[in-house]
Length: 348
Image (spheres, rainbow, N blue to C red):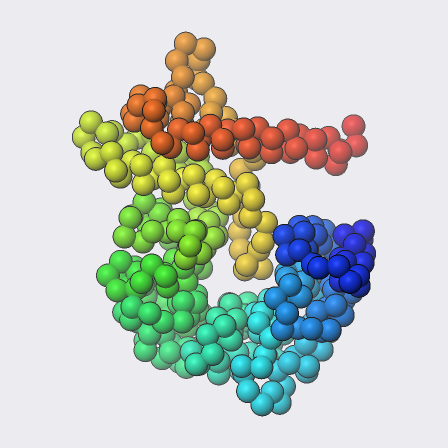
C-alpha cells in the first residue's frame, strides 16, 4: 500500500526520521495493511532492530504479519540468544501477538526476570498464547509479586491465564492498598481480561481516586481505556454516572475527578488507534452518538448537555469547562469525518 511505500522511502533516504510522522504512517498500515506490507516493514526493522524509530514498525508488523514472519523473528532474536538483554524491545510481545506458540516456553521463563523491558514484553506476549502447561509456574510468579509496591507492571495481566475469578478481590486489594500508581496498569487490565463480568469492578476503579486510573504520566490511562472497552463499559454509562452525581450532597472534588477521568478516556477515543491486545473488544459508540450523549440539548429551552450541567454544578468559570468546549469541537470534526467515511464506503 502507499503508506508502506512511503515508509520505505523515508527509511531509505538520508534525511532525519521524525517519530511522529513515522507513527502516523505505521498507524495507517496497522489498520489497513496486508501480510505483504508486514514483510516489507519487517525487512526495514531487521536492518537496525534496536533503534527506537525502527521499533515503531513493530505495530503494523504485529497487526498484519503471519506465523512465518514470527518464525523468522524467533530464529533471529530468541533461539540460542546468549542473553535476554540482547533481544530487541517489542520482539517477545510481537511473537505472542502473532500467535507463535513455539515461543511460549521462552516467554514464560522471562516473565519475572531482571530485564525490565524483556519481562514486560514476555507478559504482553503470553496474553495471546495458550498457557495451560505453565499455569502453576505463572501462578507462583504472581504470588511472589502480590501485594508488592513495585513489581513487573504487566505480570498481573496473566491472572486470567493462571488463576480463577477468586483472584479478583485480591487484585483489587493489591491495587488499592499496596501497588504504586506507577505499577497498577497491569492490575487494571488484568482484571478486565476476566471478561464482561468485571464491568462494575472496572467502573469502580475508574471512579476511585486511589487508583489514578486516568494517569497519563504512568500510562495507566491507556490500559484503563482498554479495560473499559473490554468489559463493555460505555461512555454513555460514564456520562450517566456523572450526571447522577449530586454536589449538594457530595463533595465537588469527587465530581471534578470523575470529569477528569471522562475527559481522558474521551481523549483516547479520539486519538488512540493501537490494539495492545489482539482479541480485545472495542468501543463501538459512534462519534455521532457520543456527541448526542454529551453535547445535545433535550429541548431548546434548557441546556442539559454535559456543558450546561457543569455550568449549573460547578459555575461558569470552572477550569474544566474549557477542556469540554475543546472536546466538543474535536468530536464535531470526528463526527463529520465519520459521516464522510460512511458515504465513501457505501459509494453513494
